[in-house]
Length: 382
Image (tube, rainbow, N blue to C red; front, side, top):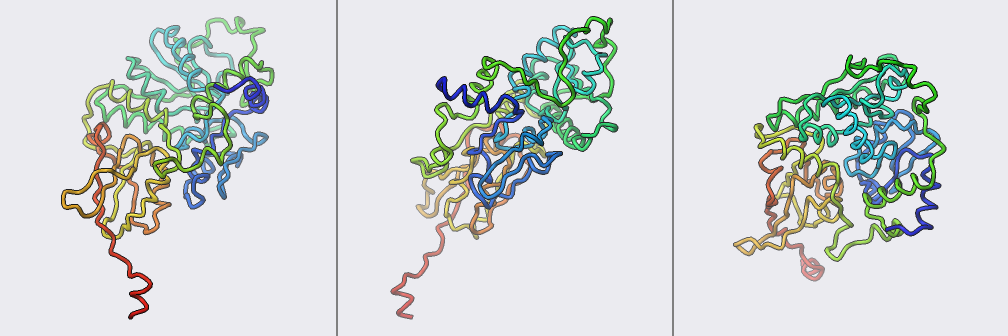
């Protein structure tokens, strides 16, 4: 657990922030050759970006839409407004109040005070929504899941729409892959049963403005935010970034388990066995290696942030060559293994076999021994 000084200092720094940075998870921080620019591409205001081993966020520019936290494959950007845990709790209460319907609404339409705030969960923007929350609701038996926007076509942040559509399509594809009839829907108005009967009941209530952060959060609330962030990033004692990126005893950079991906897999498993042999998804990946070109340098395993690729201790029966172990369930399609490959012999595909995704045993990738290079003396003799 972080000590009191850590909590106070970080809480003060986070008081007006919407995103917590975990730079040791960022692929660009781990390797400057990383090609990942997903957060930058998703950001409407150029507030976030990674370059030259540095992940940075301009809080003055940030509009708290949450789009960057949704697309980051390694969860290096953690949403704070709201936290995943708080959003899940909020929608759980709303499901009960609405009689079984899960409704999420953006701050723009929520500010019009047409919907009963006890019957929906509010997010700054629907770009904040991601697959794990939606699939967990379906896995818990919620059959009606609705995302309500404030008419995106007229919103000045409408550039988020493709990202929102991608999340909905991704969630529905994963639901279909498990044979679930449940689908996530979108609308630009609250359903009748979520409408507020008497708008005057909200008079005097404190409502958050569109894309604004509450400045009056107490240190108790900030402390909770920090503790959750520390827990999720594994930085209990706040060591320096250099310390967090030191090589482990296994000869790799520190690795971690992406929380959201694990929740997605648990939800899919709860929905039932897969009915699709493979899925084309942005959440997981499948790695393929050109064994003939591979030099067995192991850089892919060194830089893999989640341990999806590992050098295997198993020895081929012939005694020649070696194995890599690959786990599709751990692959987040960050593409860092391909970016770090010295021979350009590794590719990452978004098409994943569902059988492999739910297989506890990793797939073995055989690598022949690279041809021996002539030594200096033998070269001189020539």
